[in-house]
Length: 282
Image (cartoon, rainbow, N blue to C red; front, side):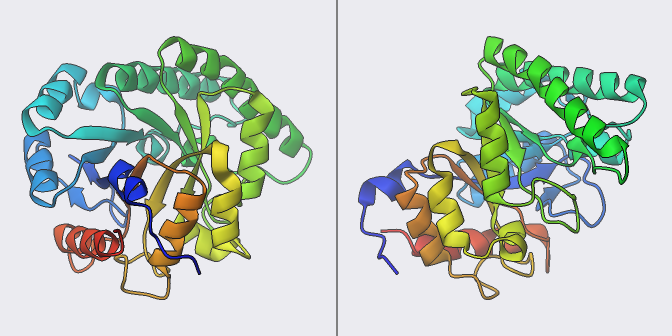
């Protein structure tokens, strides 16, 4: 295992935590169920550089309010997570109903507009849906590609990146590994679509997590950190020193966002994770 010996690597990293004014139950959102000002205040106290916000719709968080809070607290928004649009509104980019697919694309366009205004990226995770069995499987793949063919030029016009999240097979049934996601991302030949990795999901799917991170290289845009049980970093079996070394080898310089379960509570899990990770940096 290589030692982390590059001061520039640690200096270029930024840290964020997941946050939501209204969080869904049993989700890995650490700062939750409070006004946005309080979420920013908590993140600042934790020593974060930013927050990843989970929203049902951009209308729930007016961009003007959020940009003012970013300036007041000196924090950024790392990304906006779109999963609540699926969990609450049942939108999906590969739904067999074309009206639902169109609503999902329009919601993504709204998120892109919002992200452009606040200066962050958009996460595409569960909103892509599960592939059905049978004849409709290939049609569903085509619908996802068609959605991205429409969304990526729009994202480019708004200077906003989409992060395609790699999720384990028990939560999403395709694009489960870094290699699959990287190949899919590469097929669009767009600098505005990047791979989004997560150590919890990778621990389930990757034969060699460190190699997968290194080989993601130019495709890697974003990463979530959580322990192998999805609890706080440092509480389980994952070697985060080695993971940081792989990120350094991949020349990663974006956000590391803590997305673990709020056990025993969100702020304590966030604090423990951040302390553990930061102690491993030079």
